[in-house]
Length: 171
Image (cartoon, rainbow, N blue to C red; front, top):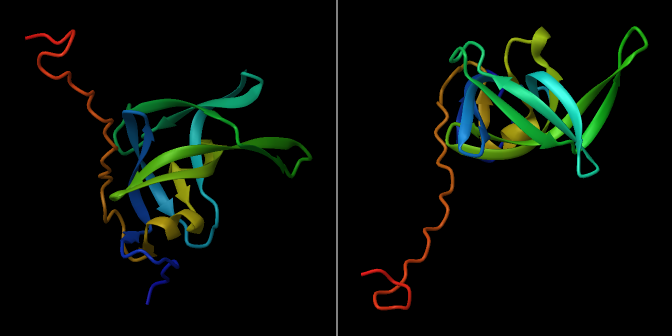
């Protein structure tokens, strides 16, 4: 039998799924690998730039849909929650920022903390680790693309209408 990631949820997902990265009313669909051997999640992005806002460190980055729908990009700015310093073999150090991002996987809306990395050396745009997989379902590695993203965003409450005859009400 193929390995299955641990989870309490009923949803069975494949080793690769289409995932939407959500930014308010905008989103971009990307390919995500559900990695049953890695705990943490990583989003592979382009044009990553650090900047300061209100004395905090932020990062600006672009999520590109790549081969799912060519030409679709989403620029996002997020506060850096943690800045991981990773040593390179040649003795240098590179920065790996951790940010909070909202994802839609199947019918599951997932807000999670993940690492951002330069996408030039990796084909899938997202690697979803077991800590996040456990929140939304389990993985059957024999399957792929089982559940297209289909998340309904919460709708804001409708403004209260004024009662007829109330001061300022229009007939």
